[in-house]
Image 1 (cartoon, rainbow, N blue to C red):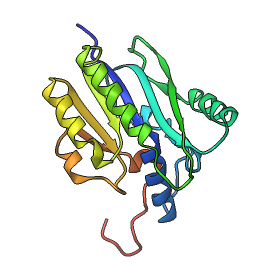
Image 2 (image 1 turned 135 degrees about the vertical axis):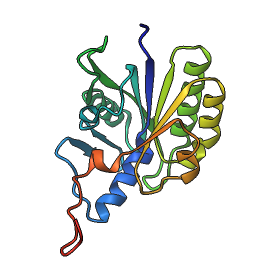
Image 3 (image 1 turned 90 degrees about the vertical axis):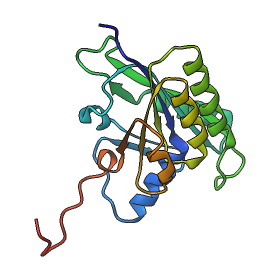
Image 4 (image 1 turned 180 degrees about the vertical axis):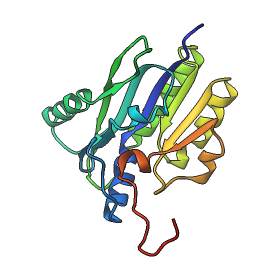
Length: 196
């Protein structure tokens, strides 16, 4: 039986800001979360959920930051040290995250380079037939046309996103959706007096 090949495309810029919004709402992060404010966030808890059950060829992690080239290099190294276990039966074992860190001029602005490079890379991998399934970790509605085009190419598209800022059109445009809230945050206890 042939292995189902996949690549994860992580919009780290989007995930980081959405994660920080949920932190601001009082959510408690899991111990497995690595976070550098305004730059990246990753949770190794995702591998324990078995939500991603394909043969992962690579995990591309896209983000941006303000800083000198040596600071960007340091962050690239930090991101590359973040791991994902692809499972006992997987050909590849552990994947490190492949960092794509872009320089931006102002801390408050979003870099278009992140979105542009995600689009280019996803299209390239799908149209060269390098993958069977693509995973996009982002709730950004700017990716709606991309997701629809990838699906038209015959590839399965899976989406993981936080509840904060999720464009609902994305959720209905993919083959499978999973929430990142429970992967990055501890479960919220039921309110006192609530029916169980």
